[in-house]
Length: 316
Image (cartoon, rainbow, N blue to C red; front, side):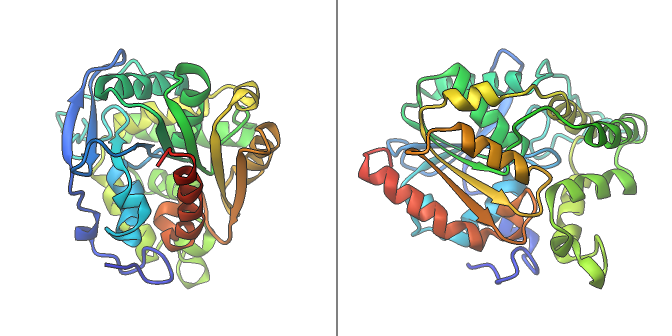
C-alpha cells in the first residue's frame, strides 16, 4: 500500500496496524511495551522512540506503510518500537472514570534514554540504529551520547537542542493543568497537534485542525492515557541543554528538519555541533515535527540514501 502525495490524508485507521510481537520489558523506570517488527531477529536492529502525544504505532507506522515491505527500511532491519511508559495501545488512563495506571519514574528525558538502554540490553542488541521523532529524537540522541556504545547510527527527526523557552513553558503549563484536571480537552488536543504538524498539515485556511491528518491524530490521542502523556510532556518541557552531548556524539547521523517544526532552529544548532564528516542535515519542506505522519513520502529518499551509507559500512 502507498500513501497519497499529501501525506496521511485519507489513510484509513486500519493502516496503522503493526504486524509485530509486543513484549513487556522490565526497566529501571518500570515496565514498558516494545513491539518487535520483523521476523528475522538476526537483522540489524532499528530502535524507535515516538514524540509526545503519540505512541509507536501512530508515529512510525505511516512511514513503514509508505516505504513498503521491499524497502531497505523494512526489509533490512528488525525494528524494536519502544512506547514511553503508559503510552502503549490499550493503556487508557483515569480520564473521567478510566482505571488505567500511568505510574512511572521516568521524569526526565535522560530517564527515557535509560529506558532505551535497558531495552537494548534486554534484547542483547548490537550496532543499533536509532530512529526518533521530536522528544523521541532527543531521547535517542541522549541514549547515543550518554548510555551506550551499542549505538552506531541515528536518524533524528526534528530533535530539540537547548532548554525549553519561556513561551513553550507557559503554554506547556496550561496544557499540563488541563491534562491533569480534565483529561483530554479540545484546547489540549489542539495544542499538542500544533506541536506536531504544520499549518498546512492541520488544514490551514481550508479549516484549521480539520484536515484528515488532524482528525486522525486527534482520534488516536483521545484513546491514549492522559496521565502518561502528561508525564512524558513534563519530561520534554524540563529538558536540559544538551549541546555538550551532541558535540560528543561519534556516530553516523542524519538530522531531518521539518521547516515548520518549533525546533527547526535547534536542528541547525545540533548539526553545527556534531561531526561534519558523519552528519547529514536535510530540510523537510512544509512539514512540522512529526514528518513521519505528515509527509512520510518526503522522508523516504534521504532515509534510503542513509541506509545505503550504513550498508557500505556493514551496519545495515
